[in-house]
Image (cartoon, rainbow, N blue to C red; front, top):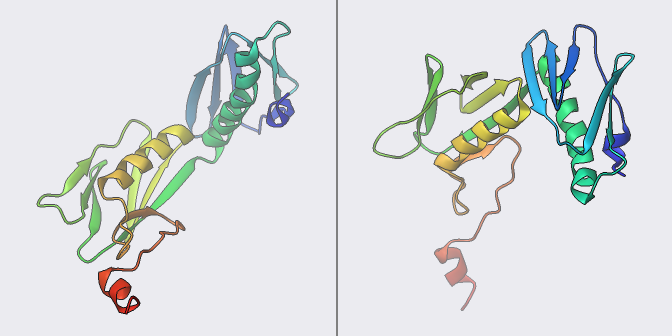
Length: 183
């Protein structure tokens, strides 16, 4: 039994949930999200709480999806009320980003700026050397942040590139530092 799966999801004020077959839809002040849960999982709405439980005849795959389903529903309720955001930091001389309409243009040492189109439900903001990605879907926000980071991942010698805010980059000693210590 999953420890996370046993905890019911509390619906805050202004949040509504509806279940249609194997699909749950959660609406709130910021928008609406839906999730199709596995056949081996039961989802019920009881007194302002969403209760997730595995069906009695569930196989191992159903037990494995139990905690995942509860976590997805919990993230959806948080997303429609508060939203999610990821911050990326640009490190390097001449590295910059700017928002052009809804899209993001990133200049990170290539011969041309790289343009990233904003998927539906994602907003970009740029503050000095920080890119802020925000939206109501946690999975989508994380995927867009990973896509932007993949443009120029941080390198281990000087630390130049795009990294998550607070991420520590393991630094390596260069050739000169290595050669001095081997005499």
